[in-house]
Length: 151
Image (cartoon, rainbow, N blue to C red):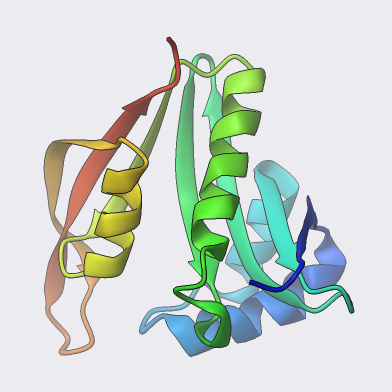
């Protein structure tokens, strides 16, 4: 694994975020959604030594509960441990800010993400029927996962 670093995301990252979204999702977040996330939520970016953004996560903290809104590693860097590093940093920051648990939704068909979350001790707590738009024009269920952040 190459050396990488984490940094806070800024509005200057919107174009890079949009490009990553388009390459990795059938229903990518719009530029407006990304701008709103940057102004309202906490965002972490994963960058190469040259400063190229190749992964990011957004999370929201409400009282003692954190919600992971989005976590993505761009395709050329997937399956190299970067998602695990980024998820660990979200967990660390949410916990340091007083969150007692971290919640997220994931497509039931996203086996790679489910494997990552299971290995990080997330437990299924429910299903959201028809939560995600599917490429076929139908809807796909989301599995709701939770991880305790307290000892």
